[in-house]
Image (cartoon, rainbow, N blue to C red; front, side):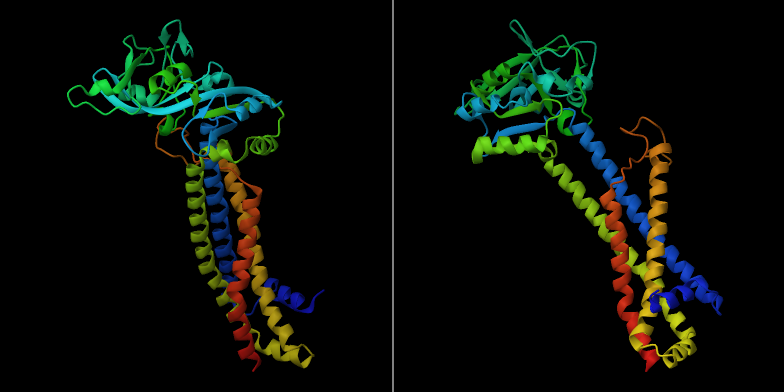
Length: 409
């Protein structure tokens, strides 16, 4: 066994002559363990919220979305899009057109986003799982055009899931100037009927701003016949999405961008990653403060073992070996604190997942979920463990070497 490690282990587990050193060593381990536990739990909660948000978005966002790099629309007869339709692993190919418009209903108005979609849109997403009401998801029938509103938008306009009077939709005409005498002359105007359902993604971006209707209605309203803003794709079961994404990028070239579900909501997830990083850095700073307890414990141990140091030197121990003894002592305290902290953190995360002890509100139903979501990621646990090791080792390296050398002088 390594000589400095053997002596350090004896110092850590043998009964010391001064009980204060035992207490300070135990406090040092507890301090590191609590900071480690906090890191594991906090990062797992952030992961839980990310997974929760991702579950909401992925119910309506396509598996892959193709859109132009420049400009807002693409010609549906673009040769590359015709080639894309032939990609063998595509299960559903649906065209969409998104533009802003003004809607008026019950004397109320709102600026919203019209999303015109193909008839196979419901097959490309899990939209049917998000519908509320006694009607069915339908986009058009004969000469009638239907609009499925987000649930918050319907409430804002004073509408139920089903409404008898159609809502009026206005969009500015291309190249037309607004006539102050007759402002509506510069707008295309049409109306949408209710299919008897609304959708709820539980994200304000969609629920408060979107109306889903037929792509034909959107193209007529915005004067963009034969144009789409994006192509949304669903793939056959078992398809490797990353490989499919790479293949489609190579097929379409640099004029198109291909985004998966996370990239479609890049801003949201980037903000959550930044918040997670800030929490990690903040708790790492607290961990650094906790490591000062280790320095205090080792300092008292060095003073107590002054006579032992002289004996070890007389027995042939080098100054380097003696310094390593106290470094190993500090490292073991950090290691035990890290192991205990990770273990307690994982246990608390498991208990929160199963029992939801820490709730988000005093009464259930006020939030999308009742308790803080938790998701433990292996690489986060590994990151936390090595963070504790590195911070602990660095924090004590200079003070221990300095104190040890003063003792040896």
